[in-house]
Structures are given as C-alpha cells and as structure tokens.
Image (cartoon, rainbow, N blue to C red):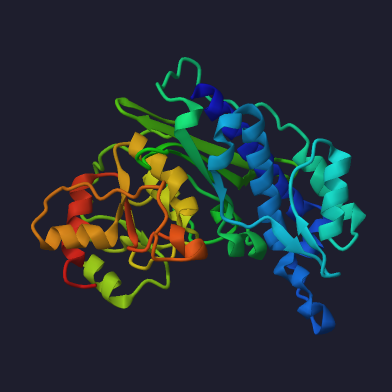
Length: 379
C-alpha cells in the first residue's frame, strides 16, 4: 500500500503539471478558452480541449498505475471516455504511448494536426515530476493491489479551472470560487465492499512562488481497519464558545435545505463554494463541519478520494436520502456510508455511478445527527 500511495502522489503531481501547463502555455491556453463559432461550432472537436485535457490526465494516471500494478488494470475507472472524434470525423482512442514522440503523434490526430500543442502535452505526460515529500515510510496495510480499484477525477470543478479566477488563499478561510477549487482526485476502494481505503488530492493552484509560477499542494489519507493516517490533522475543538454547525453548500442548493440547516447553524455558518471535491476538502481541513448536497449530481469519482481522507480523520460521507429514511424509521446511527464498487442497475451511462441520494460529508457523527435531524421531513 505504501508503494501504491507513493505512486498515486507522483501521478497526481504529473496531472497537476499538465493542468498548470494548459494554462501557462499560450498554444494550449488558447485551445482551453476558445469559443468556436460558425462552421467550426459543428465540429465534434468542440467537444473540446477541456475534455481532452481531462482525458489526457486520466489516461496518464491509468497508464502509470497499470505499468506498476498490472493486476489493477481492469479496475481503474475514470470520469471521461477516451474515444474522440476530430474535426475530420476520424475516431481516435486517446492513450499514453511508450514514447513521447508516439504520444505526440497520437494527440496531433485529435488536435486536428496542431503539432505544437500535441508536443507540449506529450512532454508533460512523459516527464517525471519533482519528488513528492510524504511520510509513507513504515506504512503497512494488509491489502493487495488485486483487492483494490481506483476512481479518477482528472480535473474536478472544470468551470473554475477554465474561468481562471485567482484568489490569494489565507490560512483558516474558505474561498468560494477560483482556480484553487480545481482538484485532481484519485480514490482507492476495496473491490469486495466498496469501502474507500486511500485517497490522494492534488490542488494544482494553491499558491504562487516569487517568480509568479503556480505551486500546488497535496493531501492524502489511508483508512483500513484500525489504520487511519492522514496528511491533515484533525481540527481541534473550538474554544471560542462558538455554537452551531458550519455547513458548506452549492449556491444552487434548494431553498428548503438552506432554511432547514439555518436552524442548526450559527450566524454566518452557512457557506457556499464551487466544486464537490473542494467542498469535501473544506470539511477535511476544518474550514466547514459538513458539506450537504440534496441532489444526485455528484459521482463516485468526485467523492471516493476525499471520502478516504475523511474516514482517516474519523468522519465520512453518507447517502443523504438513505440517512433520512433510516432516521424516519427510528434507525439511530446505522451506517449509510457511500460505497464505490457497484453500479446502479436501473441507470445507464455515467448515471450508473451517480451518488443518487445526495450526500453529507462530515467529521463528527454528532454533528451529522444534528444535520439529519434538521433535514428530516424537509425533502
């Protein structure tokens, strides 16, 4: 498990390098933000470079994990399909090739012959990142790679990534939108039970160095049986007499949910932010006590990685609809944690992997009970 964690930290940093490159290099940035009009608008490639950047990152992670752990090959799942149709109507399957030159040639066929953009991307894909510092030595978890599966979200909060708003982050403060909301998420789950057992989160746009270049930050956690280790420490108890639970929501959350939560939240304790992964990261960091979402608009790739970190800190992510059902039937404290191994048989496509019942990400079960109590009968 320590070897797998080190690998995931490394490939997440490679992914962050690609995400930064697409904003720093003019040929790539122009593709990222361009709006196509007229005849070009009908080209399938409008499906866009944003999607290609996602797919490139996803396939790079899949390639590197498969190379070191071939027994995981059939259980590395991602958000995006890797099949593209370029402007000439040619169908291209995006994969990472054995050499930088071969990868560049393949990407050029997707990019309608744009050799400059293809070469820039291929170089980043095949370049090893700087060493990632993480105290993984001595980490021993009795699990084999053949027992595990992986969920990848290449760039969570894509709209914030494209928008590019820059915020100067301050310690202890939640910032609702901006580049910092864009995250690379890699979660590992047990194939037998669907429990999330390891998560890596990379925040490519955390701060700028003195030269004005973006630097990232990574977070990781392992939760398996009695082993619970996280790069983040559990936030201490509030000593300022502050009452109420702080909850982060999507700005589009239903009004009845906002009104119900106001009863358990103190003044100014209902907050809003972009990106499902970033909102759960805010809970991990202690910037909010919980994240509530009443809609089934997130997917397994959004929640698997941060769920593992929360478990390592004593929290978790529950299915909101199931939690409310159990609460109404008097089922106190029954576990309703999200799992990651089984698709919904009654759904098709990506919807098979949606968190259909909504969710609550939490650090403290007593606060979770307060939230479920407040929402009882409101949805």
